[in-house]
Structure formats: structure tokens, C-alpha cells
Image 1 (cartoon, rainbow, N blue to C red):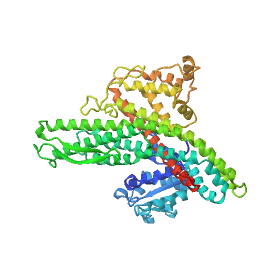
Image 2: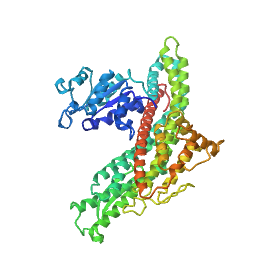
Image 3: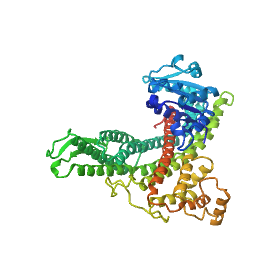
Image 4: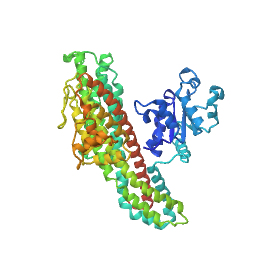
Length: 595
């Protein structure tokens, strides 16, 4: 893992609304691992002061986000308090003499010298950058361009910049234009695949948004009557998914099913919202019968699904509480059906990544380099040679990131299903809201008395990571041994500590004795391989049924943090690849021919 090069210092209560808008583009240009944000870059359980000091000692730039109430947050001068984290970050940065850029947000201005402690006043000597809502995009582009001299750019961004540079070169050199034109067919396919990959990842992220904003709040608070927000957020996400589906090239049947699932979920949530309104006195009076609401259309004209909302009134003879629980159960089941598309979307992302022939791009870069004069274009030739090599490394990174994301998604699914509130894909349970799953013994893995059956599946997954020769497990093992897949390595270590793995024979060519010897000698430093499995076999001791929920909740919290970080990093990589595809399309358009 690379050291972060940009440290973002901020106050949650002052700049929270701008943080994501700023960090996302920074990660897209420079890479997620090069941008340090405490909530994303520090793992649970790590020592906060140690991690901050470690990061500040290695970064090239510190961005200090300053909002309207930065100096006097919460009605007091927090910067004068020794325990204030922003103060400590600034002092550490000033002492190390790293580049510090105050970033003014929300029409904020630099504080006056009298509003800062004496030791922080050198901050006022640093040139500030202002990001206003009116000129956000242009101001952010300017800030990124200024940072480029101090921070190493992401390889995707480097290649994208070279493609834009080629727009100039092909007008100067007919041979360069010919070299690009000869690769036009395969490169146009590369454009289509990058656009498809980015679109599929956006749909995947929107499904997670539905899970976090609609499903999980209903799972954890089924008696809450505040469901209007859930219905609105689902409608917004459904509209965004519908807009992405054509570009994603998802199979027609799967796209239609997703639209239908979203329509049913919208119907259930709107019905639940109507019940809540009726209970508060804002809906139809008792005995009013069925009251249909205006239909809502989902499908963008391709497969329009009209969703009428029917409010059940008291005249139907059901107690209000029973009707509410039935409606909640129906909404949870419909949302779980929407979530069932997550695993298929992971497969579609993996398929698109597998179709992305970046070696064709590397070939084109090498061909363009050969057309340039060694003396007149020495710098361009050097950059093209360097970036042609980076393209090969990028292809490998995409493979292991997609594989890591898929395995972490599987772990997350199993842990949700094993927990008391496991919901995704298990809507038909016997709980009050259908939110629990039946025991599902693992494939050949023993299940201890009182432990959830899904843990057998997790043990089987650990065995596959250790020994399977079926894709993507060999890719993951190779990447972990090379120091990549940091999030998966952490989760695998945590899984072994909680669920353990049965002793296994080990990879081909190694018997149980060799695995046990390696484990006992401490030779297995990576959390993969039969040696690691054998070394934690003793951790599989029976655990009481009462202890499992606590252990699973802690494990799921830790793994969810790693999964979210891996998801953000894959999202940023896919977005950058989409930008690369756009630049490639503009380049190919300049040499003529249909797109």
C-alpha cells in the first residue's frame, strides 16, 4: 500500500457537507490510497494519535478545510484548547514544514490573527484556495492542477493526460494520427467497455445507497412512522438506476427484473407512508375504504410500471398495529428482492473488467511513441514509455480490486444473514418483520451448537481463499502476497479469529504435516494458505449461543468498514477508467470514423 500524499484536515460540524465533494475528485485524480481522511484511512481499533502523526510525517500536502465556523466551532475557541484535534494536526504540519493549503468553503475567510493562538498564526502566511458553490468545478480543477506539482498522480490520470496530449500531436504529425487510426476498432471497444464498467459500478453503488438509506433503517426501527424520507430516497435512487441501465448494457431480462423489483419496493414504501399518515390523522378517516394515490412510473418509458398505492383502512377489520407490521414485512421483503441484484451486479462488474483489454491501449501508446522524433519529442516519448508500462500494472490492479470487492461483498452478505437482523436476501424469516434468516449449514463445514449456520459458509470461503484454483482466488492470493488487497487481508485475519477454519490439507503438493509445520514455525506471515488455516483451527472452539450475536456484531462492524473502504476505492478506479474512456473517445473522434 502506498503512503498517503494528501492529508485532509477538517471539522465534521463545520465542513461535513463539502468533504465528500472535495475528497471524491481528489481520489479520482490522485488515487484513493494517496488521500488521507481519518474516517476512511484509520481502521477500527487503531491508535488515533499514532495514525495521525504517522500520516502527517509522510504526506506532501495538508489541506485545511475552513468553513464559516472553523475557528469558533460550537460557540468557543476550540483551536485554543490543547486537546482539539484540528489544532494538533496543524501544529504537527507546521512543525514538519510540509506544504499547507487553507481551503476556504462556504464563503468563509481566513480568521484574523487575533482569532488564532500564537502558535497557529503562521497558517495565515500560507496562500489559500477558495472553493465557492458558484464556481466549484473550475476552482476545484485549479486546486488539483496546483497540487499536481507536489503529489504523484494516479496512473489512470497520467494515461488520460497523455491521451489528451495526443489530440495535439496527431494534428502535428500524420504518422501519429495513422498509428491511432490503425488501432481504432479495438480502442473503440475499449471505450464502450470502460463506460459499461463505470455505469455498472454506479448502479451497484446506488443499490448500496438504497440498502443504507431505506432497508437498514427499516430493519433496525420497524416501529418508526418516519418513512416518508425512505420513500423519497428510494424514488430518487430508482430514477438514477433507470437512467444508468441503458449504458450499463446489463442483460435485458435482468434490467427488467430490477425495474420491477424497484417498482414493487416503491409501492410498499408508499403504502407504508400512507399508513403512517393515516395513523397520525393526516390520511383517510376510518371506514373510508381503499384510497388510491396517484400512480408513480418507474422505467423511463422502456418498461413502465405503474405503482398505485392502496391504503388499508380500519374498516377491513385489522388492528392498526397488525396492519402496520404486515406492511413493514411487505416493504422489507420487497427491498430484499431489490438487494438480491447486488450479487448479480458484482458479476456484471467482474465481466466488464474481464473484457477490458488494456493491453490494446498499451500497444497503441507504444505505436504512437515510435512515430515521434526522439529529439523534438523526447519528453513525450519518455512519458509514453512510462505510461505504457503503467497500463499493464493498471490491468492487474483492476483484476484484484474487483476480486477483492466480490469476496468482501460475500463476507458481508453472510455476516448479515448470520446476525439477528440479517436481512439481505432473507426476507422470509419468522421474525416480527421477516428480518431473520433460517440456519444454513456450510458446505461440509461443521456447525457448532448455538452458532449461526452461515458461519459454515464463511469457513468454506476461507478454505477457498487458501487453496482454490478457481478464479478469482489465485488472483487474490498473488495480490495479497504482493502486499495488495489490504482490506481483504484485514477481514480474513478477523474472520479467522472469530469463526476459525477446519484444518485442511493445504495447496497441491503439500500435506497436512507440511502445513502444520509451517504454522508452528511461524513461516506463514500472510493470512492465506493452509498453514494459516491450521494455525487457527484451535480458534474454532464452541461458543455459546448467547455469545455469538456479540461476536458477530463486532466482526460485522469491522468487516463492513473494510468493505466500504474497498468499495470507495473500486468506485474511484472505475470512475477514473470512465474518464479515460471518454478521453480515448475524443481522441478517436479526432482521427475520424464512426464511434
